[in-house]
Amino acid sequence: MPNRAEILKQKFVDSVGLPFSDVLPATEIESILATEQVTYRHHVFSPVVTLWVFLSQVIAPDKSLRNAVSRVIAWLSALGEAVPSSDTGAYSKARSRLPERVIRQLFDKTAQSIEATVPEGMLWCGRRVLVCDGSSVLMSDTDANQQVYPQHSNQADGCGFPIAKLVVMFSLTTGAVLRALVDPFHTSELVMARQLYQLLTPDDVMLADSAFGTYGDLAMVQAAGADAVFRKHHARKTDFRRGKKLGIGDHIVTWTRPKRRPQAIPPEVFETLPAQLLVREVHLLVTQPGFRPQEIIVVTTLLDVKRYPKARLAELYRLRWSAAEVNLRHLKTTLKMDMLLTKTPVMFRKELWMHLMAYNLLRTLMWKAARQAKVAPLRLSLQGARQLFNQFIPQIAMGYRTLRKRLYAQLLIVVAK
Image (tube, rainbow, N blue to C red):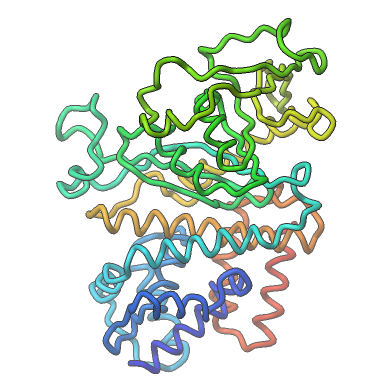
């Protein structure tokens, strides 16, 4: 048994783990498992093997447990080793024994490592931009799921699915998921996003839509040492005849903290907000191929008109669509994360974090391919990268060392094409 587990671990590291070899080496995985004291009895589905099988399962078009176990059987058969039972019970129990915190730590490692490879020259005005947006994810209609993630309040009992709210921060440069939070659907998207503000680092720039364009959100982002570029909230009026004029449709005004505390901001947080805030309001004409030009007003804490001219802000906000809406569609449609067929909240969250890590795996592959071919990484097809990756993996796994390196090099070339 231990011999088969070691064989499988090496096969996964040499195939599925190739794009992660720099950002998430095998030693890092084993270190996290050791720190969390995750050990199994001698079994073909060891903790490391279970993680790799789980990851390959969510990337595959067929996400069933049976398909995942079939992959293990086929690989062991090709190597002349004894094959495990085709019953999915052993693998299912191995997945359930994996702590959620281990998968979350591994996801965090991938996000940090991908960003660490971005050269300063590819950043927007020398700043890292994080694009924030929210969505929802359905799950199997079980009592356990309904208790933690109840269905929509507008639906009658028995006529809806449990639903969770997901808030994600994407990297504008690589497209990878850097931060994420999941809560019951009735939780406000803004309340969740405000928890992520605490994870912002100085010199970050946060980009989001009009739901975030409030005094509280601008002040909280600035308190984290970061800057914000939000579309103006619809309830706030703008008069370009007032304030310090920087150009046509571009001025700096002073916003005053609301007299009445917004319900979504806790009293202790509201009291820490400054009494006034300097805000730059910019009228933009955002053009998108295939769509009519759109006139919007952006509010930002980026006050330096020379470093952040109006044209660069328009360019930045135009990228928000592909960096948020399109990437969320990739997560939910391309990776089929719109509904996860797990029966418990714990397994739902494990699958959710594993999907986010699988998405980052594909983004890592695309990032390496784009850098090698000297093309824009966000111009590559995530679906195409996923299809090619799934086709190359069996060949890479069964190849000898030289062949594996050649196949992986070829994979990067065709992904870029």
